[in-house]
Length: 338
Ligand SMILES: C[S@@+](CC[C@H](N)C(=O)[O-])C[C@H]1O[C@@H](n2cnc3c(N)ncnc32)[C@H](O)[C@@H]1O
Image 1 (cartoon, rainbow, N blue to C red):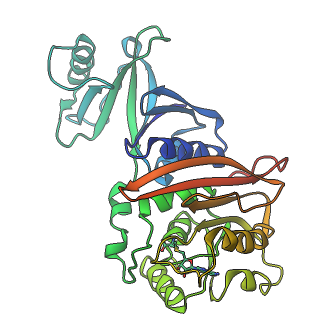
Image 2 (image 1 turned 90 degrees about the vertical axis):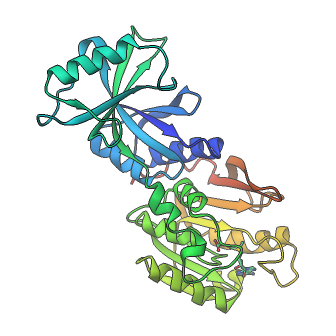
């Protein structure tokens, strides 16, 4: 099934990286391909896989499945009077009449449907693809959970600190890490728990560590509030804790490095802290697993065979740009699919 995913206009490079990671985690055939400025095309097994994909994504608007050439397919309403609407992708609505839209509307009404532009039960899209023989018809099959994500912003959680990561960015990072059911994710700089919350909401079991006991208690409150308590939250210096957790292994390390005055490091330079803390946790990441690091920049903190495979700079506001990095072990092969 060919599915077009419209990405959010905000942070487009991160949106593409997130979609590529989710498609890979779901075992999609081939990598997503750009077909328009902010639209990528994915070849999925079925509609269920497409809905799962769009529900996981943070930086996407909607997914639509290709039905076929407009001339050759005429989807019928599922019940008499069902409301539908159609738009042409990449064209503003209004203006001159569009014969392709008239063709779809004529057929839809003749089959018993009605046109509903405000709250349609079904939405269709006409796409003219220069590489195909004409207009193609797509039907929307799912939208991202944007409202739910915005509802988890830090100002609405019980424990709030300025370092709290925006849930849309946290969800994108959790997707870069491949978080999902059956996976365990660790965050050695847990803070308010924003990254772990999204990993847990994607189905992962989560562990977090923070040197500040108030952060550990606060992250626990936030995760409980969201109905996804952590498997373990531990107070202490993360490098010391890494030496004390026995044989624990993880599918991903997902973390947001300390930055600025709001997240103190006890006077230790951030680069030195990352080089001390991340390797012992990365060593506990299973083969095929990833390290996702959100950072203000600086050198790569992990030794060979870890190598950086994704690096996306994201401007959050005038004085804050964060880099989203993915590290994978060279020669480890792809991770198992979700
Ligand atoms: C940027 S904040 C994490 C923000 C988090 N992603 C959130 O959304 O709230 C970094 C955290 O690292 C913690 N930290 C700094 N040095 C640490 C260390 N050596 N071991 C464990 N935690 C440390 C700080 O207390 C702070 O809570």
